[in-house]
Length: 420
Image 1 (cartoon, rainbow, N blue to C red):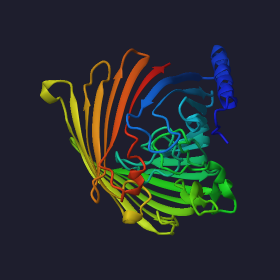
Image 2: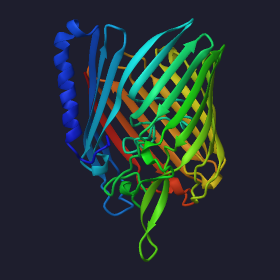
Image 3: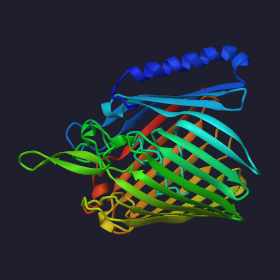
Image 4: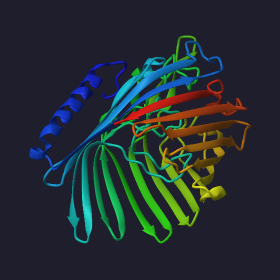
């Protein structure tokens, strides 16, 4: 698999790929129409001020992440893109991992009055419009050790065909080689009291991770309305955590099990001046709930954002967000977005350094649980930028099983990026 534990094999291979592409640039006029190479090196440190809730956890960890993209365009118009990624984390060995975010061939052409496009290989696809809870986004697996918000994804092998025209865009996906979700290890924070044992992964399908999955999406614009309709049939990206018991019937580990599901999704956005009104909704069949029972359910996130431009007669923009998330399973839901509201604000100074501040609070409407976040971003030079983030888990109620696992894991992190 592409994810390795503290291995130097894939990073070494990545370095070789980079070297080949770098060498190739000297001869690109002979072999390619265009070649581009870019990347990012991130130095990150994260500190948890509260003492650990579980044995073995550390309060501070630092690390480095490297991601690069090589793009080669052939004389026939097709192209190849590869984006390897590697992270080393000094605190949690399970957070040290490597992945191919992208490695695909792209071909395209005309189709009547429209166009066709075909991508073959490993790619990342994002669906959705809301800020807090990307319900419809199901093609790629979550790289959970990267960020607790679940928005960072692993690369997914696929055949991705696109047909577009004045009528909209139709996308068809053939997917295989299911990627198990990453989880923190014993030393890691942002986890529950029982570890997830990746060696115990199991699948409902007899073909296991090699079962073929299928997905489709139509998207189109109708005046101020942008709409997307999607369907997915295959192995769930969200595992059911099955308890592994010892002889005394104590839970000693969780075994991830991936069921076969079918999901139908809707995402829509209405743009009217400074207003953006947003909706994501799904119906999912075949998944298990928090009680480990199969339960078909529906869920939605709805809300909007409003932007005040040039506030205080300056270049500064202020954007306010509000979103409501509901899960039909109620307390049996397997996410923190059971019955929650998000309130957030973002200030963009629109200066030469792209300075941006943002803050948010995610509050449960059933308990007193709240997650407060603050973030600061600023470019220091053409190559260097800094990002600081803080998260506070406040008033966590023991009835809120998902959030309760994080009650001692408030953190502050600082990341310094070098782009090239």
